[in-house]
Length: 456
Image (tube, rainbow, N blue to C red; front, side, top):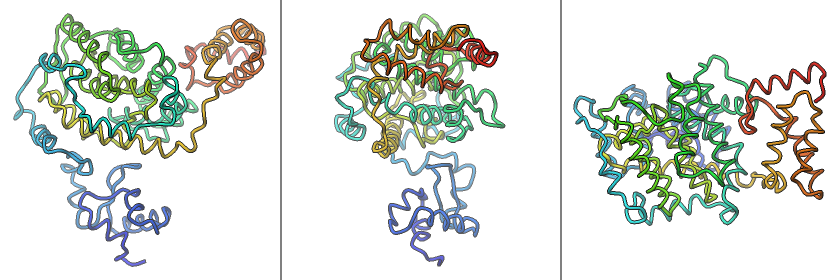
């Protein structure tokens, strides 16, 4: 192996660095494991440096190592995300120290000037591009079919990526273990574990109730309640509109402070988003206006990221998971919104992030199992039967299941639905309790009843 290998030359001549995926596209003759081995050797030899983690990890040649590795530049807006001239202007302003930026309050005109289906943050051509990127084979299926089919993967990706934007240090593998097996990562703060589990509960709330949730106060508040559970200094703030003033860290923006004004503006916001026809425009609108209003004491951005997926779930489009979105990019885009009421930077990031998300999900579509039609048709009966079994630990489980199924399921499907309930009951663990509306204490009591030999 020579130091002049084309793979190393590609890394050396890329000022913005290259990811492994980009290198493999440029050098299709090189096997992934071979490329990984060579890169590891070059890193050990000081010829290559690496910045970032996972799929976002970028490799830099020796000539750019010093530039890429400085703490100051590591916090700059990532050069690999393409920006318009307007977005670069926003970055230049936001990169000034706070004392050089003009203090501003909430600009009501920013929301009032938006006319649904007339004003458009996303141009026609951009929306066509997004629809083309996000189209799935389930486009004409009932609302929510695609999101239910990918739910297991979605829970991991969106919970991890959204939490990562809040500084959560769980790895994607840690997140998978927590969500699939209920195993918390060693050495992590309890607040990080709670944040991941809250995301899981909130995502399930949206996906499992796709027919009833909407852009309304009930959905927004319950989504916030799920995301903020056990994370706020005052638990009374969970799922409740803000009753006090808040400061935004590292920003000169001051949101509205009067509760009556917050309520009034939220009603206008919800009225406007419900009139928007295009799902991507809806999605981007709430990504802009929910954080800008700051209707809650905290957890506003997380709430906006999840509710922004609601129109995509409804339309059976690929989700927006925020995979690989760098925190320093997202925070600058949000600051540009807060302090300048300009959406260009967030829009550029939205398009880039959605493309990354669709690449992930379209890549796995061959392996995507079709949802079990019986499980889909009787999902509420199945969930209720499991809940009934756990909440009645002193009763015979099969009798409880049979009673619930016989009351609602036609005779032709009863045996199969009963079998599905038993199968799900056997897989029941702490990580899926929210799906059935169960508390950990109720699950523990049921397990204890099994151990003591009482009917189950």
